[in-house]
Amino acid sequence: MKINFIPTKRFIFLLFAGIVPLIAGGTWVEPFMVFLVYNLIVITLSFVDYFFISPCFISVNRITEDNFSIGIKNSVKISLINRGFFSLTLEVKDDYPFQFKSDRKRIFTLTIPPKESREIEYFLTPLKRGKYSFGHIYLRLYSFLGLTGRRISIEKKHDVKVYPDLQNISRYQLMAIKGHLQRSGIKPVRIPGHGMEFESLREYMPDDEYRSINWKASARRGRLIVNQYDVEKSQNIMILIDAGRLMTGMAGEMAKIDYAVNAALMLCYVCTLRGDNAGLLVFGKDIKSYLPPGKGKKHLHMILETLYEVTPEFVETNYPVCFKFLGTKSRKRSLIFLFTDLLDKDSSEELVKYFPLLFPHHIPFCVTIKDPVIKDIAFKDCTSSKEVYEQAVGQHVLWERKKTITVMEKKGVYTLDALPSELSVRVINEYLKIKSKARL
Image (cartoon, rainbow, N blue to C red):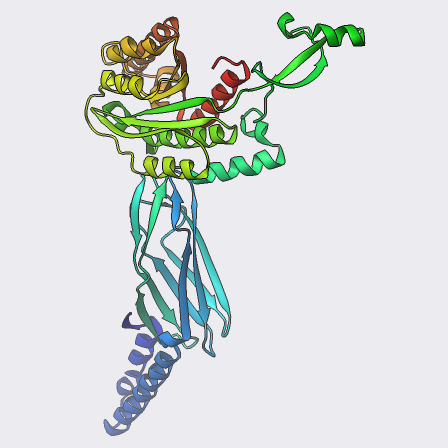
């Protein structure tokens, strides 16, 4: 703890006020004695004031979670207790990691009555995964006299880890319990499908398939009855994350790979929740991480720790190595989600060539992330020749992406091109849709 003396404006004003008797005139002895006694009183009061703001009268503590979520506002609280007998006015500054984005100014001002406590809360938004350190908490204390202050540096260093969006999972759990998933755009978790597991009987609806009609039950009841099947479980869902050059680009405030990691974590959670086996493969120029399909809390934690360490590299992605590795490891029919990005036909040549080869043994699903800036440029109203040119370039980029996506769709690949803010919800909906139609 470091302590520094701070003379206030009030203290300096009172000291200079003591010059008045000297200016007033008279014999030099009397004005000087008045000046001396006056300043002695001011200095004595300042020492008394300084004693009232002793560091032993203030208690400070920072309260945070050990794990933060990327791209989400994470709460930070500073608890302050005034143990003294007089009110204290404080200026508080927390030394949080400079890479975090704060929702408020760095300096907080407040007054704490004697024997009472106050709590400051602010929110930090990390924009990159990794390990970060909080530093000191800096205080400026002033007592009720306001003659002096103390500058105090309190060592409160501790580390936090920034993980993929963990709060999204908590929100999903809460909304699933309350039955409000549809409000967030996610379809209900439990969807009857055409799997092999019989669930119940119900009356025939006009859009039901004839093969689902239970003729014996229909004869007994005198009306058409259909079998309703539950979606099959314990199926393999492989999640592939491209950690190459194309995923280093920014989409808003975060890199594209961070949006992909958030969506992948959410997808893994929903898969395990529905009884499927979720696997993970991270690749760039070479294979970086691989987790075979599994389920359960322990497996989900392993996926979380693997995603925490995913870092993109400025290298060209080696798709043939990835798909060859996947072919040797994943023999069972799987739904394969590939999170990557597209620019044009040339840069995506290997992806278009090799990814469709997984079909029909597997179900390949290519997920790409739209750049909201390019989308805005391509469809904005133009007022100058420069903007017209930018719009033409933006529309050409979107057209090239669309053309590449269309080629893959014709080869049997499912595709999804979504904005970063919609990515997690739309990927989950596509997974649920495939499961409900028993395509796996």
